[in-house]
Length: 112
Image (cartoon, rainbow, N blue to C red; front, side, top):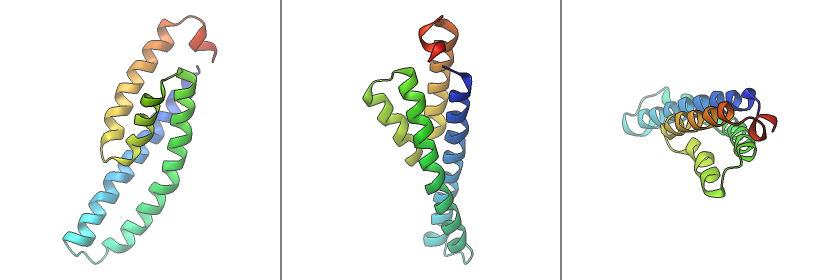
């Protein structure tokens, strides 16, 4: 597996995680604190998160298929972009695991 597959996944995991946290903060500002500018903010961040989450799904699926993950693990990684802050923890765990596989495997995973 190429290192770029992991890099794409990591980048989109961070972007998706940050946007989801911002969206949650915007929703709190809009509905709990009644902030006037929060409506436009949540609209923009929500749209951005929605579109970029689709890219996250594509990159996470690509990584999972090349790493030959079981279906349960693949689903957990795909859903991590919908739970605030989960993407950060899942990304860290996945990155360590995949980097260890890439460096330890001589042929199978490195050629994928």
